[in-house]
Length: 193
Image (cartoon, rainbow, N blue to C red; front, side, top):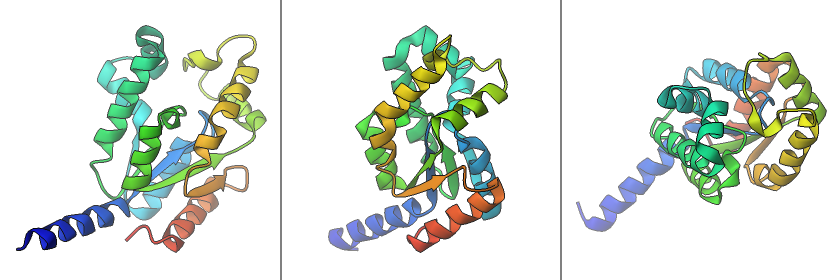
């Protein structure tokens, strides 16, 4: 095979693989794990949560990793988990809420799959976080002014989240309907081959 033909073939294979990955982004508590699991189930794909991968790798909850290693090292570890898990195809990947902070991560997700921004109001997300397992350590929004800190995180990250190719409001219906809507919109964009 000629070198140019070989390069074209590799590029076509890379593009086809990228059409079989969905990256879910959004604030912690917006529903990435729940919607990701439902979407993966409907597609017959695998589901991966980068927070779970990082927690397993480090032997402690992600909040503890953040506290013990600091935010800069935490973001490096989070990026490594993202890149490693994206080697898979036919996969839905729920990312940590801060994965979008690094421009390299946003670019990587755009190049290797469909990035979906799951959005909801800060009030709704805060309510979900309060209703979830209270044992989950969330150092960036802990304490008396947690909801305000969550609002500040959203304000800081919003433009990065909005770089996603697809936006889905998680307050617009039950999980099954949202998963079906996500799949339909992904197909309309040419994904899920």
